[in-house]
Image (cartoon, rainbow, N blue to C red; front, side, top):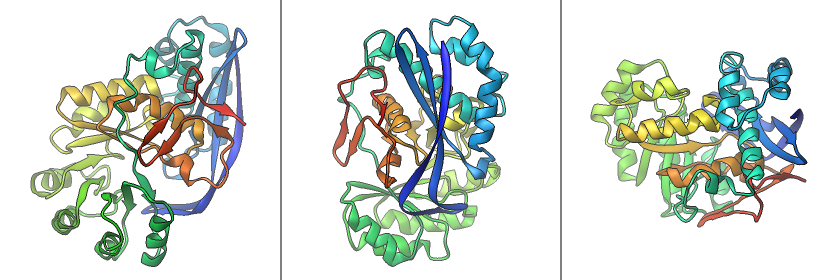
Length: 336
């Protein structure tokens, strides 16, 4: 087994702003595992909000190299368990490695990942397309630029409701809103009343992660379902979110990869919660992996590669009506 990795800069089509950060270029780490003439690809982006850098991920992977290249594993979950303690503080790096392991695992069987997982690709929810925070005029222009059936609207400004009203005047598409921890419980409850009238499907992470008491109030009084994102990062968060959120958004990079992500989805389902897997602003490597998990989900957010001006990879094609899988095994992604 050989481990390698490469840093890529991903230029965005538009400056992307959410409540706590803004960027025009996203750097990402693409990991490669090679064995028996086959290679598996995985990916994790940097994230200043969580203190994650590509340099830090490379350092973590380099320290773990002797294990990756020296042990025999029959299933990706075995490699993940070997790295559990090592990557305790670096879930992003473990995600990239775990994703590459699943890609290689499926390729060795000559199967697509969804086939290995026993999933039906005909049962994939439509991905939303994200509109980052900007002036109202620019947000309207961004929405008109891409004709989509579901938009996720990033909020966390002083004129959030005005933004949604302006966008609603332009389309009958489904809206989802994501405040990225920017509101108080009182704001979330009050805003939910107007947002429900504006045809919003659900609110994602309205309060800061640590405001569990506030979420009790929102959960009880919101006119819209609420979805956890920052409040549901790792497996132990799922049970804590039960009774405070109606749904969870699993981010593979925060969870540590596909292996724990699958467990989080199953646990949420067992608790009667709806599930979503969301993306960062990733290349087609990370997005392709998400697409193979999509048959398990109620919602999916895998538009990251669509926001890029230049993608170093190609894989699944996400459209407003579904997903097109390439005729390749594994996750189906290749570097250009």
